[in-house]
Length: 123
Image 1 (tube, one colour):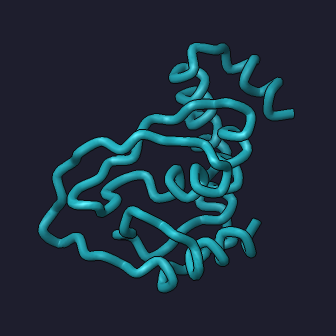
Image 2: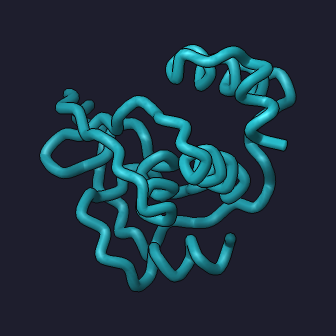
């Protein structure tokens, strides 16, 4: 998936602007897989066309062809735009086992399914 993400960042028609300079490939892969399985996610927080929170969800939604809502949000004065081609892809997983479990619990709750149902989908 690294090459698909890289191509999107360098050549894709990406409407929203980045405000973080790194994207974790394994995080995008997990969200992408869940989106393809029909799991819904909370929207991306946006201010003046800039992503404030939700870069990984946004990229996964573009790759999967699944829509994700954008919500208006406030921007801290220190936030600057990062050009998508300048965003570094990190192949090391940022999530710990505990954090993965928390994400799955949150995703199950958001989708009104049990954690067991979610885990079965992910097999």
